[in-house]
Length: 192
Image (cartoon, rainbow, N blue to C red; front, side, top):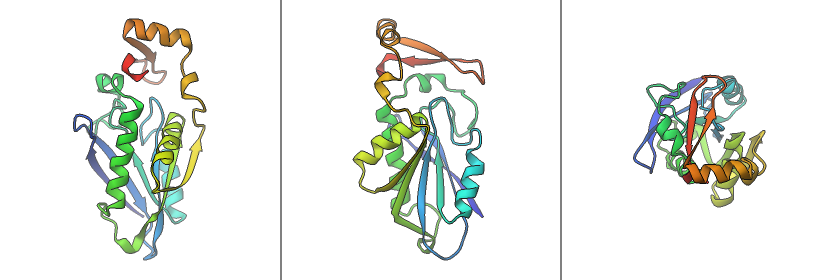
């Protein structure tokens, strides 16, 4: 199996974010799956690498990305070291980040021979809030031919209660506890 890591830059503040891909070399064109992590997530969390290996072995080019404002950095890909970026994240940034990666893939800028990749069969997969953002991206980008969501957020407006949103707008920030790291992670009201 061939595995590579790279760093791309967001359209928002030129912020770097990590991307990786894997595939099994077969000299046959394979569809591409781009995976989007969820809220308080990152591309290497939980079982995402195991899933990536299994799907690549099954005959896909599997790409995972960190969203640029998810709080991790290329130097610290599994630690929330940039809570200011996390607090300034929003859906527009995430949609643009997905677009940056899609452009990179579809313009054959990965180190994958064209005989190994079929960008006309481009699929999105998203977990949790990443599933919701994947749905939004698939609606606006005709390059997406298939969509898979894992426990996607069904209603973005219902993600937070009306009382939470009212207080959020008044205070300008809400803090979300990260159960794994015990960090109080800021969310600035621009998200609403």
